[in-house]
Length: 320
Image (cartoon, rainbow, N blue to C red; front, side, top):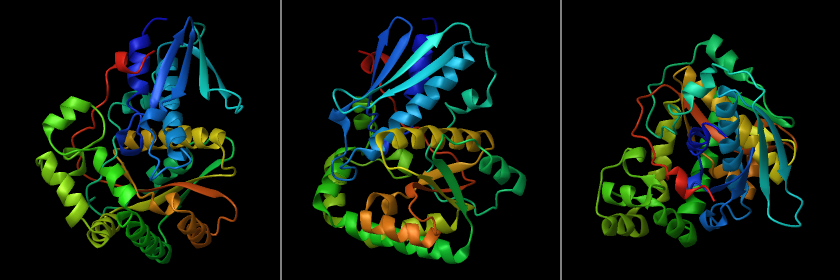
């Protein structure tokens, strides 16, 4: 397969929880298999691997965009039968037509921008473009600009921070994936670097001490509230089902939407606490009046300055 390194490299530019990059790629003739890398799972914040499979969906979407850009047609199959290893199969054929897709150009530009935004509204035409992005079957998006709903969601985020930031396992897991300085970042090529979070570089020992003894849910909630109020809109991506297939399709749909947003210079950042904690997920369903649909991702979108980009492992480190 020609251009295989570029295809895999662009796939790995997908987002993932704590930038764990929980994927493995196997190459067989004209086939690429994507496997979950459970050594990179997050049992405290993601005990059922829901967000891990969403990340696989994001990587899959990138892979398909780049493959089609390079003239391949693609056929995708999910193998989640429960009788063996879960994986996604992508068969590439050279009978495709090269696509000059704006989403291809957006892949290396996309990032989770965790900073405060500038408060400007998204023009209706651009918002309509995002609302019209085609989702996978059973997946839908909901843009939230209603003040009362936003206030209620701020309360949910606050509750989520109180639960998570007072959970020792959550804090230990989070700390293990933070790269507090350039040395840590270059060593691991994964995780959350201080620069991508808009924080100063500090010694690792002090970072661990700070999160364990000083960081509080109130401080995190204050920061989240400021960031939400600076954003143009909130966005929920939801599914009819709550299965591995649905999670992957959430990832594909989410990545497609945020790549379209990136092409419009619209930033995004996650506020997933209400989706990660079951009792808060139920409250979010009530606030949004979405019935039995499953809110899988909660984001804020708007305009802001880009931050330094997260690191990625080398292609040879994820291909087996």
